[in-house]
Length: 156
Image (cartoon, rainbow, N blue to C red; front, side, top):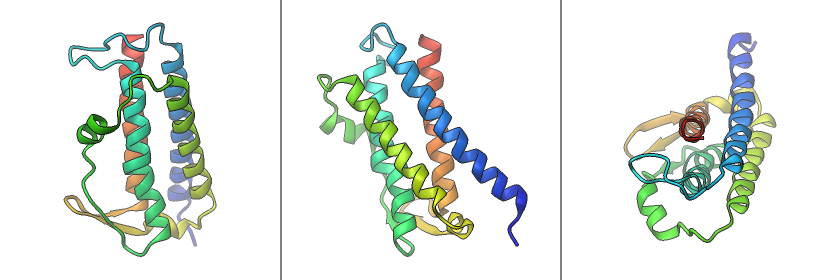
């Protein structure tokens, strides 16, 4: 018998991930100037949107997909700064970036909703952090989007 509180928590987690992703994309779209620096570090909405999309695609979302598809996958550390240095394109349309993020999150959510509750406990192994459950990667995905949503909202 499933623990009702855990089942409800996970359903809420998926709802929050969907809502946070939608809010992040909406906040980015509402930016008057997506290239205006957001803080002293100099990042702008365009860079932040690309970062969130890429981290979802190359780190958290990928870890969710592989944990569902493979037995005990091994995950290397994802170095977002290194990735951005080789892949960030300031000429890439913001709408393309946001659409890709929305599609990636939607696919991840659909895949998670189709799984039995037991899938949430599946393990993968991170080269530095050690064993992590599928649930942890979903929680990290939500935390990451929320962190950057807060940044965009503060600047807006």
